[in-house]
Amino acid sequence: MGLTATLVDPLTDPVPAAWDRFVTTERLLPLWRSQLLRTADWCSQTASSMVLVHEPGAAEPVALFHARHLGAVHPGRFARPGRLPVPTLTEVRTTPVAMGAGLTFAAAAGPAERAEAVRVFEHAIRQHTGWRGVALAYRELEPRHLPAVPTAGRLRLRLGPTLVLHNEWSDLDGYLASLPGKWRSQLRKIHRTIEADPTLRVELVDTLPAGEACWLAQVVRERHLSRAVPRPPLPAGYFGQFAALPGSRFVTYRDAGGRLLAYAAVLEDGDGPVLVWWGSREDTDGARPNLYFDQYLRLVDYLITRGRSRLVMGKGMQQIKQRYGARPEPLWGVVGR
Image (cartoon, rainbow, N blue to C red; front, side, top):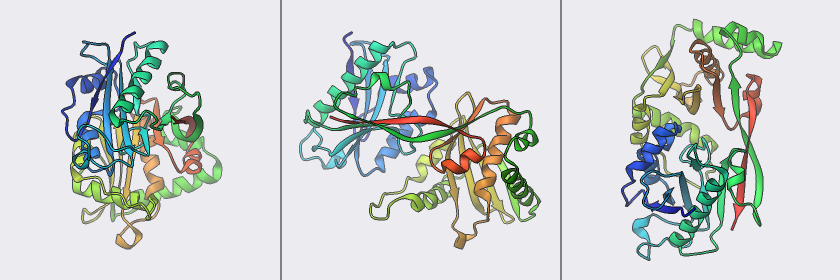
C-alpha cells in the first residue's frame, strides 16, 4: 500500500494546508482545526505531534493523528535537536477537550488502508522519539476505530461512555412529558424559576468575549483537576478562536448588570449541537443555583426547534445526563507497546 507519514511539531513547524482541507472535506468537528490544536499545544506541559498519513507524493492525507508525549518537555528545551527525550507515554487523543479519538480516517479509506495508516503512524512516532519501545495509549476510541488499532499484547479498556440524546419530540413540552415524573417535575420547576427571575438574563448568542469564557471555563476545570498535578489554563486566545468558528453557539446566563454568571458552549457538527464546555462562577462569586441543570433544557430546546437529530452531551456526570434521556455510547482505550 506504501503509505508514508508527515510528522509536524506544532510548536516549531508549519502545519501543511492539507490538514485543514481534510478537516473541511471530511466534516470533522472544528476542534480538529490546526490553529486550535496549535494554540492548545502551546499552553500544554507536554510536547505533541500532528501526523498526516498519505500516499507518497500525494498532497491529501488518508488519516490524521494528534498525539501528546507525556513526560516530554517542550521542543525548545530538548537536549537532542530533532529528537524528543524518551516520553513515559504517547497518548493519542484530541486536546484540550476529550471530544473524540486522536485519529481520524478519510471516509473512502477501507479497513486495510486504515490499519496500515495506524502502523505507519506508530512507526513515525517511534522514529520521532528515538525509542522503539515507546508505549502508546489510544483514548476515546469508538467501536468503528477498534479494527484499525493493533491490540496484540496490549490492554483494551472500556472507558466512560459519551452521552447522546436523540431527538424524538416536536416541542419541549413533549420532551419533558417523556421523562420520569419526579425528574420531570423538578426540571419544570427549575426552568420556570429561571425564566421568571427578573434579575437573570438567558440568551443564545453566536459569540462570547474570550476573557470571560476563559475565566469561567477554568473555574470549572479546576474543580475537576487534581491539585497535586497543576496544569496551566487555556489562553483567552483559544476561546477567541473557538468563538469565531461558524458552528459555535453559547447559552449565556447574565445578571441584571450584564455580568456573565455561567455559559454552555456548543459546536454544530451537521447532525446537531455538541456540548464542549460549561463555565460557571463559584458560589462565593455570584453563582446562581440550578443553572447547570437548566443548560441542558436550553440545549434540548435548541435541538428540537432547529430540527437537529441529536445532542452530544459529552462524558462525565453520566447519571445526571441519563435522567435527561441521554444514552451512553461506548468508548474504548488501547494501551501498550
